Image (tube, helix red, strand yellow):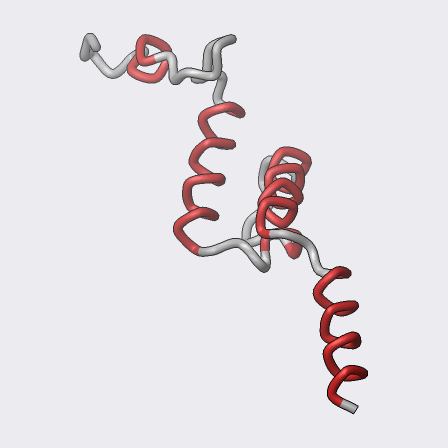
Length: 86
């Protein structure tokens, strides 16, 4: 009986997504969602709050054109019009 339970538990664990897969799904959902969408996409349900916050900030910077071709935040663009130089 114990062997059957262990096999069942192992099979269920094999079907679940890794945290990395969940995060990647969340990134895709944030990238594809409408600009005026609010709330947390269902694909992000398994993502920790701190990680979700970082992902949404990252996507916002990308959507705003503030990330350069190397994936770094372009501080000149970010501060453009603020009256401050980096």
